[in-house]
Amino acid sequence: MSDYIRARSPEQKQERMEAIMAAADKLFQKQPYHQITMGTIAEELGWSRSNLYKYAATQEEIFLALHSAKNRAWFEDLAQSLDGAPLPTAEFARLWAEVTERHADFLRYQEIVISIIESNVTLERLTRFKRDFADMLAPVVVLLARQCGTDDETATDLYLTLLYQAPGLYNHFHCADLTREAMKAAGMPPVEGTFVESYAQFVEMCLENAK
Image (cartoon, rainbow, N blue to C red; front, side, top):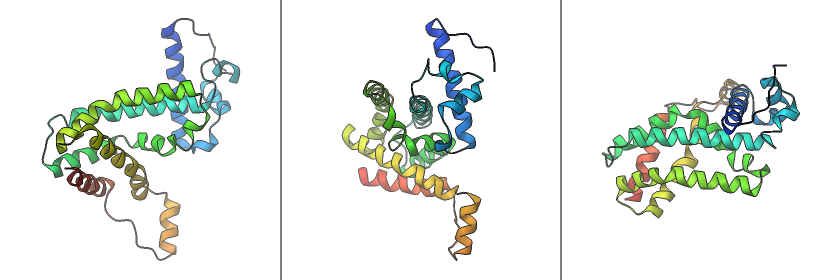
């Protein structure tokens, strides 16, 4: 086990939390969420579980923080890449899809955020998460409203539609080898095309509908 010194200052506590998030993210890249526990995260860090509990009460708290960090990175990339909006609809849709593919790791967190991650945290922590999300979302809503010439409420609904479609569509084009083999054995047609192409078409359709 690595040497452990309890954090005292806010900066040290932030460093510890970043280390915890990095360890959990590394585990999530290799295995499904249900196989990850506070114990496996502590083991990845080389800490005892009691030391880990000094910084997070549940693994859901850790994954909530990871979702926020990856969501923020996606939002910032979208805002930067689409800063020239309004753009031709097809160009905007393609850029949105390409940026989303660059943040495919975020889609894995989004896929479980409502059904799993939010289910075992305190109301205080979840409220803070929702407030942070609203703050992060505001510039993207402005961007979508500008692109479509709509109000913020319509732009927010549009964003949620685009968000909820992305994880499932990404998984469709990046399914496991076993799934591909099963589809072939069942006589189903192979998956054709790419996530970017398909998602861009969906985004373009939604943009046109929102105008």
